[in-house]
Amino acid sequence: MIRVAYVCTDPGIPVFGRKGASVHVQAVLRELVRRGAEVHLVCARTGGEPAPDLAGVRVHRLPEVGRAPAAERERAARAADRAVAEVLGALPPLDLVYERYALWGRTATAWAAGRGVPAVLEVNAPLVEEQAAHRELVDRAGAEAVARAALSAAPVVVCVSDAVADWARATSAYPERVVVLPNGVDTDRVVPSGLPARPADAAEFTVGFVGTLKEWHGVDVLLRAVDRLHARDASWRLLVVGDGPCGPALRAAAGPHVAFTGALAPAEVLPQLHRMDVAAAPYPDLPGLYFSPLKLYEYLAAGVPVVASAVGQVPGALGGGRLGALVPPGDAGALAAALADLRADAPGRARLAAEGRRAAEERHTWRAVVERTLAHARLAGVAR
Image 1 (cartoon, rainbow, N blue to C red):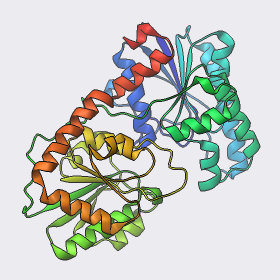
Image 2: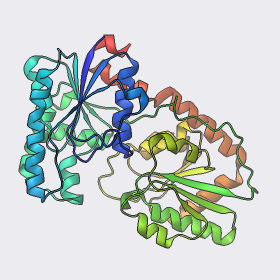
Image 3: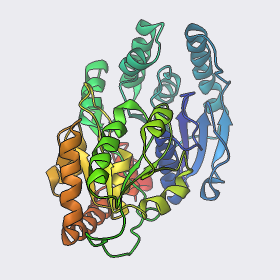
Image 4: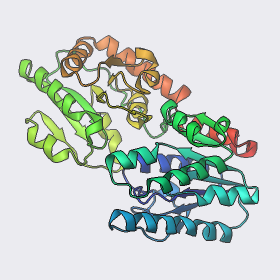
């Protein structure tokens, strides 16, 4: 048995919560547990109790970073990160330190480098730029220094997209250590409904969206697209799974043909995916689209045909259009037309569902993502 410390010092990620980042953390933990590893989770925030299959993960809490003015919160986050060294030092000998890069996280990679312990730094976003653009960053120079230190100390830096990798390579002293591994999906947990494609003339036809309701997810464009379709044919429905800052405005603008589930636990999402005839990822055309969308892989694994904006990593995830329809970002008319075309082609939807599921199983499982990560870390005994 190998012993792994998974470190997440980001106070914005409740590791056992419902956010996309939380789902990502749980997926990696789950794969490590499945491999028989003894897993120690070092984190700033739990967000609840672990799922039953993660109950064996040993949790080590860092000092809390509470709500406070930005400068004070940054100091508290640095102090919490410094506490990582004491936690890791108190653990039995480790075979791997696996850290999710956080804005103020530099201790875990430095601790591993100083002791010759294999380490992986997983980077999901250029957090310095993200924090400065969308929140508040008082000590930008300090955050940039932390990023350089963490990225340069890690022997393996795994990035979820080409754009993130470009940032990491420009920041690290060792750009050759950076590799790209997109996100994945648990195909054992996310499965198709087994029902046939709904006929084009069905009494109801449901378009779905899963995710946090933030402006960069483009749900307002999706709402306008479905409104256009519903104005011509009252059988169109929209199902929005999730909640977030844009939720109140979207609900205020929505008609009775739109249903909102609110925030759901990860285990509660699959039945909602099974309600969808087509799923959408209507991202707008914003600068710096660096993410690797979890929702796309969940749509594919659930066997739900996809319509998505042709931005960022999306075309690659959809095989250049082979696994889903691609539309110009921010264009409600083009999105409505693509949805109407898919509705009219039930055999085409069935083909997309089957090919999407096949692609998820063959190329996009979390099992494969973790195996590749561990292989880069040269831990052959874990990667088997």
